[in-house]
Structures are given as structure tokens and as C-alpha cells.
Length: 446
Image (cartoon, one colour):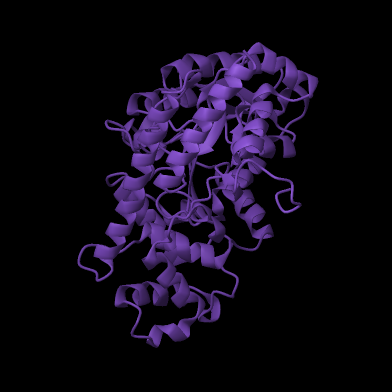
């Protein structure tokens, strides 16, 4: 459009619609790239310009590869030594809760793992068709995977008035209503939240686990934003850790799959498609089916497996790359924390916009007031009102965000999702532009 010579009131399109950190100017973590480079081109192992701790990791990964090459297939569950590193990482993260490498599956990003687990859990026909409970607003991977499998989507609503908290009474309401037309068997949780950015507290996670135990639900914990926690007094607790701490009655019975990825956190390595899932209490026969299902796609990308290894096995104090690694990691996370606060504060200064605190992840999901005149015009264009709003925003400012209707929202409320990934200076300009646009929009349709 811009190339065709039609004059636009802006000079560039700012893509704040996808959580793609590097595309928005975030720098890669040096150590991760060094190890992947060494694995990809082992001749570099003789080069003095690479640190010894990076070479050590690359040699170890290459030894796990057929013919010492990233170009060979691996076991469909992933390279053994990487799965061992993932298990040690989980044990460290969860304060010593044991993790078994045999329960770890390396995946093509987290998405591939989530789809695979849903695939083996969905069965039945008619009223006995599997129901999958998902948070609303949700990350659209879920609704897409559910519809692809012809499963039944069961919505439970997060409480916007209460900083997008998850309430067990709402889970119970959704479950009981769904029993009339399907067999709800799976409960999906996204923590920290996407698109909503909330971080669940320990009590909430205990309540959810108790509910899953009571109702015999399979828990899916999407924890890809576990490194992205910004708000004071917020802390990431994994479902696995809390499950373990609740005692054997829970720990030996609740089926849980949890997911992590190279794409988010401080790494932002979306393109490598690295990820893993840990699946516990899966029946041995079903586990066999899962391995069979995963072997159809041969193996996850091997360079992605290598990248995942660095996320779970980063430099430690005493290693030569440690100082630079920590400096880069903290710089990314401190920057994101600053941008989360800035975004929340600026949105809440705009009349007709309300934004909950961005406790974690990398998105804002502000609620926007849309005047009835604009709603009528949107309907005349056969558009959802928030889609109409986002299209106008794009046409007038070059800012691309995603309408809340793409994620689901309570009837009569409107939102959009925006990433906080642009550099601070650019983010300030972007938020100023949204403010000017919104005020004009309200005047035009008053």
C-alpha cells in the first residue's frame, strides 16, 4: 500500500501485534548464538575467538548427535543430554523437586507440544466428545488447535476487575455448563498470561490443582513466559512445584503437562523453534502413543534443541562467559520491566482506556471504550467494533495491534493486545500516537 504511492499520514508501520522480540530490535544473547554457531560449524571449535565454556557445551551437544552433526535426526523425544539438562533446570527452578529426563520431550517451540498433547487427549463423539477448558482471553493457538481436532472449546473467563485473576468458582461454572454437551477433560492455564500479562499467586495455583484433582482434569500449564515477571510482589511458581508441595495424594494423581520455549523470556529466539514439555502421571500406554505420535514428525529442529539447551544450561558463576551473559540477560529483563510500567501508566492517563498492571509476559491488553456511533459504523462495515478501531489506528498511525475479539473477551467489552517489545524511545512515541488517536476517535464518534 505504502509502495503504491498512496500518501499515508505516517512513515513506517510499527508491528506491535506479535511477540517477536528480535524483529522489534532486541539483541540476541551472545552466549546462545556462540554455542549454536559452534554446533552448526564445528570447524570454529579451533577458533580462539570463542570462549571455552561455549566450546564445552557445543562439544557435548555434538556428541549427542549422530555423526557429530546437527544435520542428523535425533531421537523423536530429543537429544538425551539436552533432556537431562532440562530435568536439572526444572529441579533447580523448583527448589529441588525431582524431574525425570524420561518425562521430558523436546518440541518445535511450545506450540507443537501443546498440539501434540491435545491430539492424544481428544476422543469420543457427540456428548462424549472431549471438552477443553481455556481462559478467555486466550492465546489463539488454543482455539485453533481445538477446532482443528474437532474438540469442544469450553470458555472460562478471567476476572478483569481483579487484575485478570483466575477464579475457581468460574472454572466450576464453566465445567458444569459444559457437561451438558461434552466431556470436559482438559484444563489449560497460561501463566504468566497471554494476552493478559497477569502472574498467578501460589494460592490460586493450589486452588486450580485441587479443582483438577477433584474433577479428574488433565492440566496443561503454558509457562513460556516464566522468565518475564516484572511487578513487585509477583513471583513465578510452576504448577509442577506447587503440585509436588501439595503432597503425594495430588502429586501421584494429577496429570500435568507443562511447556517452555526459547521464543520468549530474555532470549526471544522465536525463529529457532526450540521448546520442551514435561509430562507427568501419564498412563504408560498413553505415553507409548505420545512417543509414536511424536515420531511421525521424526524430531524437533536440532538447532532449536541446541538453543533450548543453552536456556536451561546457561553460564554459571566462575565460567568466563558468565559476566557478559548476566549483563545481557538483566538488561533485557530490566528493560521489559521498565516498558511494562511505562505502558500501563501511559494507557491509564488516556480517557476511555483502562489497563491492568502488566505483571508479566510481554503484552498490554487494555480495555477501550468505543462510542455507540462507532459501534454502529463497525456493524455497517460487518466488522467487530474493536477490529474497526484497530484498522482505523493502523490507517491513521501505522501502528499494528490485535483486536481483543481475536482472543475472546466478555460480551460488551472491547480491548486490543499490544506488545511492549519496541525500544523505549519508540514505545513512548507509539503510546503518544495511540493517545492522540484515541482522543480524536472519541471526539469523532461522540
